[in-house]
Image (cartoon, rainbow, N blue to C red; front, side, top):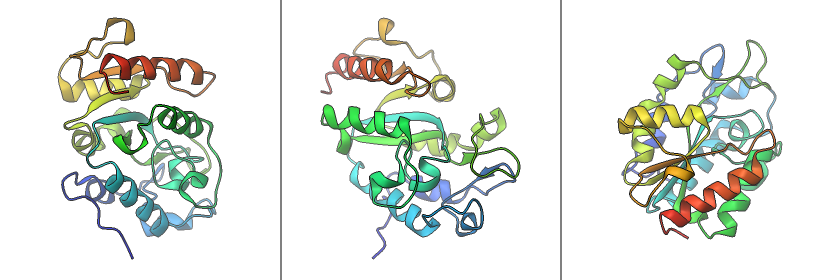
Length: 214
């Protein structure tokens, strides 16, 4: 049975409406199965997205990243998540491991929406098993979904691209940990990739403490 996406968020519909391009794949659409020889299917990825949105619909925190990576959400359907974590065949992804380890350690897995500023997978031309930084125009296409994702939640911006897009929606600068307070709606932390997992963990735990969420 297919789970119905949460109507109150509308995130699934917002993402499914985004078309793929030659250098950015919407991995929830069926034609994405024609690229990259990935082991999971678009139908499975949609199902995992619906399950995640349903599980965290009443949650009070959102982690916002930059974009889907080919080892992570491209195969799992859920940002910051590897295929194995949601019971699918596919690659493991170091950042996903760091994020889920943190959330489990502080008991926030069912309270945290996982999202990306650009919810598609940006890749190099003709290379679906690659990652690239999304362009500003691509990030613009994810703004409508991002607005839904952050509504009514405390926001942890994981990295600078996420920070910039959330700042545009909130209309003000987002503080780092050392400048944050309980009234800060959003805080930016270090991305766990490229050796940043320990700092990501400590900064995110500090953010939760500031907000008294853990």
